[in-house]
Length: 263
Length: 250
Image (cartoon, rainbow over the protein chains, first blue to last red):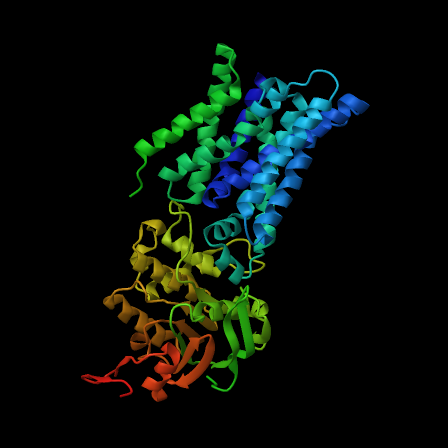
């Protein structure tokens, strides 16, 4: 529980910063595809561990590799596919899940797919806290160091191209950071619910803040409040934490509609 | 400022979207210090020609050179004002931040005080100095166009490309726009895409008629025949500075 709290708080920073970029760049369905297809990596890792006894095959490591590969695929499609981009992204989304589910069903012994799909705080081990902290640091350094670039790219990609910014590589970098964030959040919310954590706090903060920076800070604060509250309720009511956190975040988002009509 | 070297040099350029030809065998020079306007009917290829000059589209055949280099190499010296920006309508960004994006460039990771100063000056030139702290999405269409104009000139470009800069701007702001062009002409080559020749003819040196083919004329030599060849029908021609109007090509 203590580990889960720390991971939840740390990950709030990552999803506040990256979620804000996802929302203003309007790529939440790309984030969805990256998140869902990471099940392929989780399934493959558990399969290798169960069938061949490879203890190095950690599900989180598998998720990381699959999410990064899928970020690359999604980036390639959204950059170079001339037509039906959304259909191909949708295919990456479900093919990744299908592959993951098949791996899980071929894995000997009992594997609880639910815990990966919807999150399970008990999955959070001590070393994962360090992983989350390292990913946080990477996300913060890049997300804040390249703030002006990501802002220009998200606001007007064509203009950024004309200004000579490396639009394609910056766009790929952003999707890779989404992949890292998704992996951080898998243990908290699970891959199905992760998109809500990326988008809802940022969207809520965006309704009341006047800058992208403010949106990131606001989204992080929303996470800092809702994630521990969800974990606390989950512990007391014996309900899964992921769905509780997502519902809390959704309530905050609805609240921002009532409160924050921007002038 | 020398009028000799072409800023933009286009030779035998053809471009099509799939099988539909948009520009056919176009050749054109835009000279330093000149104000040029691309005019023509909707779908005639004006914006496409601008995108080819920016290197956002690749020609099927022929070549485009800007400052004697490829468009990609020349981009950092070009200021570009698109007709509009399809951004997230809730994007939390101030007017000043949008203009400062015009100061970004290859190899630049952050922006500083000088970028801020130049951006404020650009805002002043388009008459929006008091709007710097406003949220960009809350502005009117015409105000947004002027912000995009400021963003284009914030980098002190040597070539300024503007796509329908006055389409949403009211009469008073058109004067601001004309004044701004007068201020910066001579410092850079300027290309204005416009469907409103009546407006631009008072400030341009060269008019380029774009309707799949490309034909350039000196603004003094424009006559109704030019327009008939362009639009394929008789048009009413308004003479600038004259009291009345005359019927074209009787």
